[in-house]
Length: 261
Ligand SMILES: [Zn+2]
Image 1 (cartoon, rainbow, N blue to C red):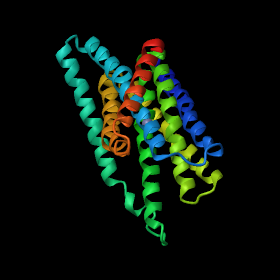
Image 2: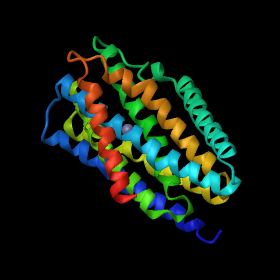
Image 3: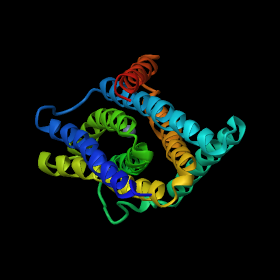
């Protein structure tokens, strides 16, 4: 496939651009000292809504189109994509189970050890969930579909802003310096180009597997949204606030996909 290196290159550049959203959010720590729990939940919920719509419109729909072109049959097409979704979710489930969350700060003593552990768990969760996001951007350019990739870059980049800020604010709140909190925030975003490289290589080497690979990225995203982001953001003091923020994010991404992709 002659366009193969091109897809990898587009995905890498695109996901790097998207990770600038994380960096912009993390830099926000120099302007904002803290976020109220309500605002944090609202922003992260909106991020989840963007992720959710990106999963459907920029990954699953194109995956179904590709699969139908390949198989010439809507039922086979849907089975291939569902197989991808389930594999992606299963992969994330095993990664989550195996990552030694609780040993992250095992050596550390002190009264706020528990809080520290919780914050680092959150940082780790954001970092982990950036991998499928990067992969989504990487596979979004499959078949040289620049418009689809671009709407993913914009959407993922946008929802990275509150995530980067949330990481930096959390670290600042447990006593890290602004510079340190910001640096860690920026670093969590740099997982995305790694994921993009992974996804880009997968769709280039095995072009016929593209619908499955896109499904895989979608399943990994859905796992993170359902397992981490929604439960974490939907137990605040104002009922339905997070739900409407999620819907708002969903609408933004849906609009982006229609306008750009
Ligand atoms: Zn996200």
